[in-house]
Amino acid sequence: MTDALLIRDGVLWSDGARLDGDAVLVVDGRIRALGDGDALAARDDAAGAEVVDAAGGLVHPGFADAHVHTAMGGLESLGLDVSGAHGAEACLARVAAYAAVHDGAWIVGGGWHMADYDGGTPTAAALDAATGDVPAFLVNADHHGAWVNTAALRAAGIDAFTPDPEDGRIERDADGRPTGTLHEGAMALVSAHLPARTEDELRAGLAVGADALLRAGVTAWQEAIVGDYGGHVDSSGTYGSLIEDGALAARVSGALWIPRDVTLATVPTLVADLVRRRDRNAARGFDTSTVKIMVDGVAENRTAALAEPYLVDGCDCGAGDGRGIAYFGRDVLCAVAAAAAAEGFALHFHAIGDRAVTDALDAVAALPEELRGRRRHHIAHVQVVDPADVPRFAALGVTVNMQALWACNDPQMTELTLPVLGERRAAWQYPFGSFLRAGAELAMGSDWPVSTYDPWQAIHVAATRRAPGSDADPLLPDESLPLAVALRAYTAGSHRLLGLEGSGVLEVGARADLCVASRDPFAGKPGEIGETRTIVTVLGGRIVHREAAEPAPA
Image (cartoon, rainbow, N blue to C red; front, side):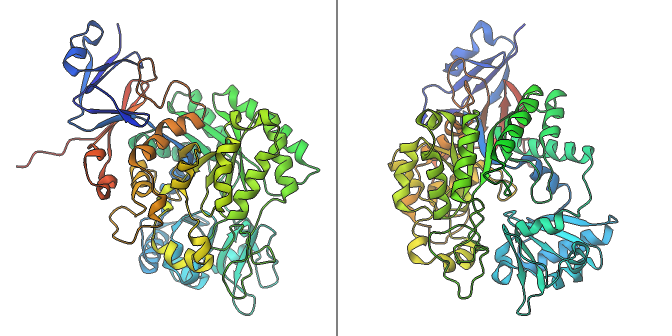
């Protein structure tokens, strides 16, 4: 007996183009046929099939998120999540409500928005009013900084005499006293004191995160940091246990974290350990054949690595010259990249500033030719890119891993980023259109919980350069992408980048990982793209999400 599914009366779309027909027949987890709904329904292998009425909505391959922190996002959503609170007062009100009923030794949470606070740096004094004497550690929405209270500073022994770590910065007042915001590596000064999560908590967090992605139509993803980072622990064991238990059916992979304290002398030992971890994870069904190299920080807190100084008087950006922080010297970066690639790892770089992008490209360029493009190397974020570097992506076979939701004039961009970049560099931001014209391979990821996991929101910004629902001026509109290109990047492009053969497309024989959207976004106005939502998600031929129908009016 076969297991069949018939999706009909939809608009079929795959790999950049609309397809003929209005129906998809799935048998035993694979696409068996595409075409006319009545004709497919009359086939012998469609007998007894479950039928889904797409009602004119787009039927497309499942999304693949090429850069997401699923375990982190799920775990944070179960605790003190302030990402939905906009404005300092709303955020503190949510913290105070949580603190009033919380009886743990620490208050841990995150999701606050830098644009809600002067200079993007909230104070311990403000947090004290909501938390009292219970130590509190709240990671910001981009996870490159943390807001702590006085009790947390005291617990970690941080005072005016505590030096900044090489990979971070303690925000201070005029007298050098810590004010409550910790940037980048300085977060670890406090996160090292947080209570350990239980295995049940870790499993619950990952399960919640995976369910959120599936509901959004994401059927495959890459966990962008597999290792200890920002108060979160290595998720390898949790992924392995869920996969072994059959509780995680999505096609997942992970990028093993490269610690920032690596030196030339320790590269061989580091890479040998990465190989051991990769093999151990593979034995449990978790693919970690990628490494994650965070080259720099973010522009908002002036830790992204720029070729020239930030436009901030008296800026102490951690690197000593006002150009931000490059976490690895170029020699170490190239050595790590070469050693990892030689062992068969794909390289997944985080690069925000123009200097970081150049350094990452140079590290790939230094590889032997046979270790370049075929290893699926990619650079995520690509916020500020020197125009001279744009054609190098295609030339080196490096995929652009876009987090498109950020490419708009939102408060964080207008209030925190544009003033410190200046006009020339501001015009280099998120050059998606330029990458397309230069022939680069494009993929997409959400970076959730830094931003929403909903692909349609990011696709909206990629195509319009405006946030959904916003009437602000578009950010560099010439760098927008056609809707078909953006959707292809989030489906076929990301599947290809992650090495997922046989999925990411609607074609006979392909794995039946696909979605039904609430509408056909190609038939509406560009400003309506973000209104699209996933109403059915199919994974391996099985419906794993189906939006409940709204009740009929009385």
